[in-house]
Amino acid sequence: MSKKGAVIIVGAICILMIVPYLAVRSWSATPYGRFDWRVAILMKYAEWTKVDLFKEGRSIPEVREFSRKGTAILKAAPTALPEVRDIEIPGPAGTIPARVYVPEGKAPLPVVIYFHGGGWVIGDLDSHDNVCRGLAAAVPAIVLSVDYRLAPEHIFPAAVDDAFAALTWTAKNAASIKGDPARIAVAGDSAGGNL
Image (cartoon, rainbow, N blue to C red; front, top):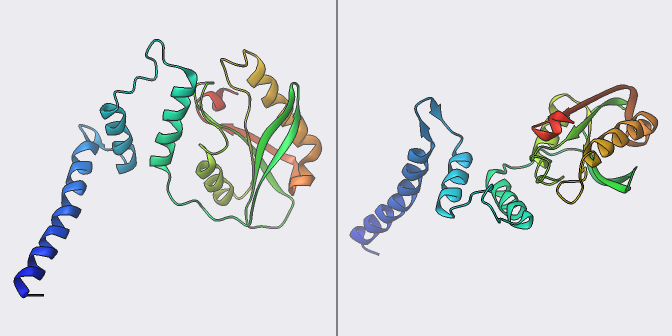
C-alpha cells in the first residue's frame, strides 16, 4: 500500500471515530453541565423514535420493551461479585422472583432489600442489576433485589404486599442468603424508594 493510501485510510478511520464522538458530545450538553454519554444517547434514541411513554393508547408491553432497550443502552460493565443467584420467595399471591448479590466478606453480612424503580409499571431484576451489584460491593452487604408485582396487571396494594412479604421473609431467612437478621435495611429508587 502506498503512503498516500495509508494516509487516506487513517484519515477515514479518524473521521469515523471523531464524528460520533462530537455528535454524542453535542447531545450531552445542557446549560447546567453535561449528561453522561449513555443518557445522551438514550434521550436522542427517544427523540428519533418519537417515543412518548405517556402517549394515549400506548400498550404496557410497548412501554416495557422501550424501557428494556433504554436500560441496555445505559448498562456499563457489571461489577463482579463472588455470588449472584436468582431465588423465589413466598408471597401473598404465589412466589416472588428475587436476586441475591453476595459481595466479598465474612458472613453473616448486613442485608439490603432493594426495590427497583419504574413508576410501578416498568423495571425488573435485570433493569437494576448493575445498581444492585454496585451497592453490594460498595457497602459491602448482601443485596436482595425483589421483583414485586407491577401495575396495571396487579393493582394496589400488590407491590406493597410483595415488599412486606420480602421483608418478613428476609427477617426469618437471612442466614439462608449469608445475611445477618439483626442488620436489615430497605432501599430503592423511584417507586421502589416509595416501597
